[in-house]
Length: 373
Image (cartoon, rainbow, N blue to C red; front, side):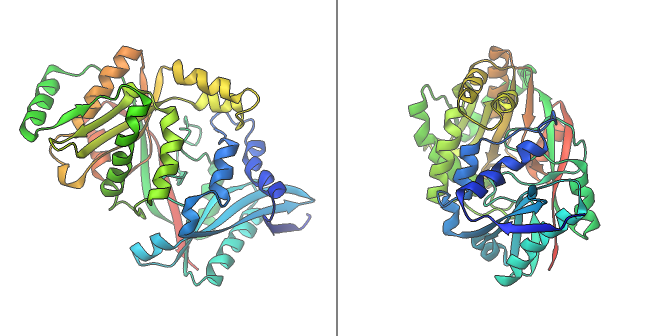
């Protein structure tokens, strides 16, 4: 068998190959959702503000002149300082079903980590927790979100064969989005809002949402601060994410709960299901990808529960019920029948809420892996 050659990505032509590889590898896989090319370029070049506190190297594996795998080696200095570790991350890790290709690529990540003083490796991760992360470890053919990674079963088989252990697990769920809000819950929500002087913000225009969006992302920094490997987003990163997410938001599926001083205490942000649109676009906005995405934003019966949370000091007060109930009512109005959650870290408060208070079905478990190097 021909030798595997791993090369560093050094120019735009090679970057295009890096971005396009999974689209070719998984083109016939129904559950694979391609990422938009321009999003990938923004993440993997100097346009990404995360590179102010991260370093990275991109690698392509070749056999007989053909690309057979890719990987990004990432060092997030802020994460390492915050969690007091020396870890190199692997991300954008895709490869043909060949253990030698898998090994050759991971060896490059390990080499990059050691060269920069790291003593452990973990992934799959992006630059921040807002990037795609964690592999499915069961139900590999289940429906994907546009914000989650696709991986076949052999990825997990290979990583376990290489001696990597699970560092953290996530659970995704599907749920009936238009389940009616019981009278008892509606009355309880009213009591909670009156007791704590809370109100539900109703934004009426996209322009109106931007001031709340800044509060929203700062609240994420506070709400998620104790979750695995999370560190607060910088102001520049928040600005990028606002530009990335707000265009896809349906205002009826934005729920902000504020206190009497207009401080954000809880939030829910859902987007129309774009999975079919992304597949039709095949990762490209032009010439016709934009049409499929625009159509999906206006005609949908499924939503992705993109981000939701409650500030730590407001947890266990039932505040989450306020924005979930409003989402249920919006789903009924729009004829939305199904909602899919993003991965929720197993054992945290959000997962307990899903498991005990909603008619949910487990969709898939996900994990990140790691070991000492």
